[in-house]
Length: 386
Figure 1: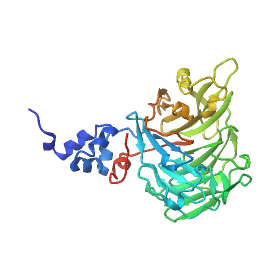
Figure 2: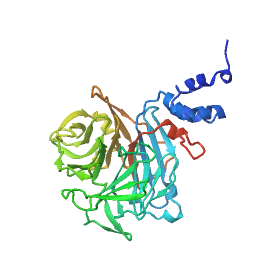
Figure 3: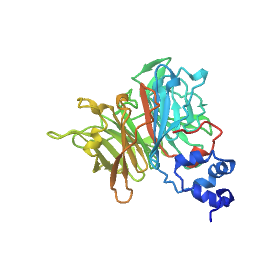
Figure 4: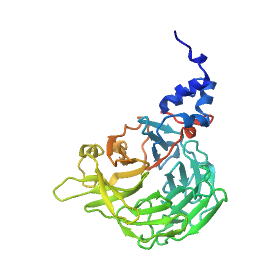
């Protein structure tokens, strides 16, 4: 004897819906008002058994027309790409340079000539008072200082970059660290990067990682590393993280460890993409994984000498993504999942991006945690599609 779903109790419907993958939940939330209210409730996010794995974000920038910009997000749990609502600049901010566009940890930012930020999934630009030192291509982090744990009120840290003055750049200045508090609507100034990091350093030559209350800055080619203590507001001494044979590398903050990820060349051997665990106390490192060679080859078209130059790496939680930012390969990517207990690493390909995508002149990539409530809790605004 069958029972119609409309005759089931609300609690039982909620339990059934909680077992659905995110793409199906998005569809289900539009079926009727009852399902919409259940799925969009804050209690549903707690009940749902979806693993809280960080998502991989790609924002494509078109130099000629911002209308051709697109944002995509990859959910590793459902193995699905989503097309995001693209954050459109209003008229007074539409001439911001593309080099000032940054994305990290649930937010997009514009850093020059004016500083603005917006949540990723439901975009709406918020202006701030001007930076003391407007800049392009800085590193940016989002953190909570422990005094206010409300997720909606984080602080932003801006490090490095190139000074931006009246559409001109000045690569000589070592720019102070600046920290923004949205509650106070004010910027706090801190000491600049240590002098080992040459002036004019930007996100094109640096990577960053937020780990255990410190904002790490790492030279992709120089291999210099230093950390900014978010409580003490000072820099550590500079170390060098340079494994044998490394050509370039990125520093990534995983759930339980810092990870160095990079390309290695060895005499009489093919190039490899290697992961090392980094001890944040001693800055020593230990190899933990090598990407399978066939997976690495799948990220490229041919055997050009400089083909690895277009490789980028981002990560968060237990996931590390490696992708090719060259458009001709449609930004192919793979992901490594690191088991937090055993340290075992499992690699797999990421599905291709949706076919209805534009050609971009630049892509901004990062990882961010995403809650079900942030996806489904504001359906009156433009949401995800796939």
